[in-house]
Image 1 (cartoon, helix red, strand yellow):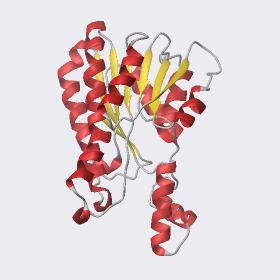
Image 2 (cartoon, rainbow, N blue to C red):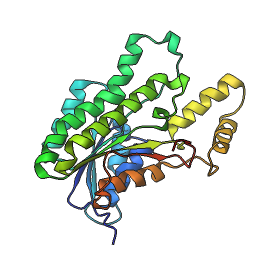
Image 3 (cartoon, rainbow, N blue to C red):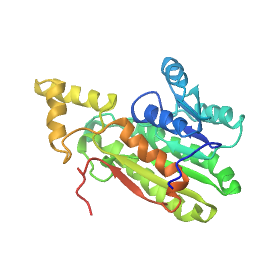
Image 4 (tube, one colour):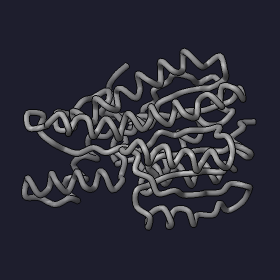
Length: 262
């Protein structure tokens, strides 16, 4: 029997107001986890925090926090840990601005790495010691297919997401013996607000519609469509369960077969 039950586990998920993050919060709670998440927007936090799993002991609690700000990260984690230790960490927060490498400043690079990478560094560094002590922990880095297939318009995004995979693999080798398993999930074309914004920008630049851009992108995926946030969330949740007890240091693509690497 495959054990997907997360009853009695506490989970933390960063950047969860919409898309993959929100889907993962709901999916973790559906499996019985008590989930704490954060987002910058108070309205989005309140909306997702209202979610109630259909059954079981799962729950959802939201915090307003800016993961690009170190003091805000610390305050968020202080609030989470005041209620007890954490078993699961999903480093999901991230941004993917489209911009030209030649016109990007140092501050552009630093600000994106502060959000995408350093938030994961800080949360993992803070929560991992107790996982080691308890001899049970799961850390999931939500990276991106852009880490394997860099795009010149998303160069800093791809670099930050590749760094997350490297960090995850290094931590997996170091702490696997403590039963703290660290893996990365690499979404491809997933129909989320982020991809809708990107398609809108391409449409505006080329005098077409967002729907046409989305349709053209979908044709490049072997399964012929965008993925859903729920399909990515299902992989994240699986990696957090006892069913994935021998998966460590993996970088799993969820891209409908679009990636061509072996």
